[in-house]
Length: 123
Image 1 (spheres, helix red, strand yellow):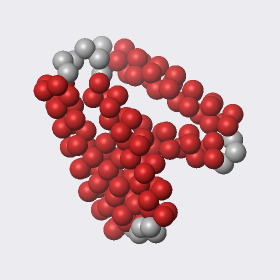
Image 2 (cartoon, rainbow, N blue to C red):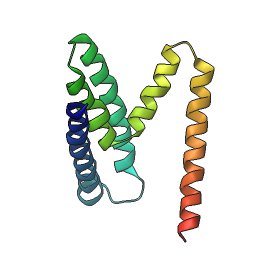
Image 3 (cartoon, rainbow, N blue to C red):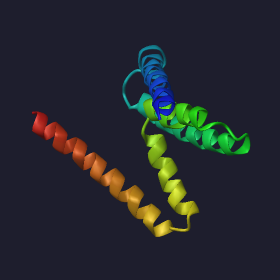
Image 4 (cartoon, rainbow, N blue to C red):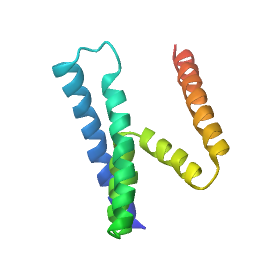
């Protein structure tokens, strides 16, 4: 259990730094902040990466520690949106399209409402 936690910890730290670097690169060097391009790019890239890492881990029989470092760690630190997307995909693949649609819709709606509520409470 300790090795798994260390793998997630290390991957998460790297993913968080990588997310910050993308934000700096995009918004301070390439595109002025007029739209949340960095968040958008990170979320889409994270979704691609988590799909790639899960597929490669199955194809090449990666150890649990490597898989955890790259998925829960790196992708989780980079963006939790990647895990959200993968969970929605898993529901689809498990033959539960309606559950997947409900999960995705409610998650997005409640997530935005929770961010609004947190902002209101914080004011």
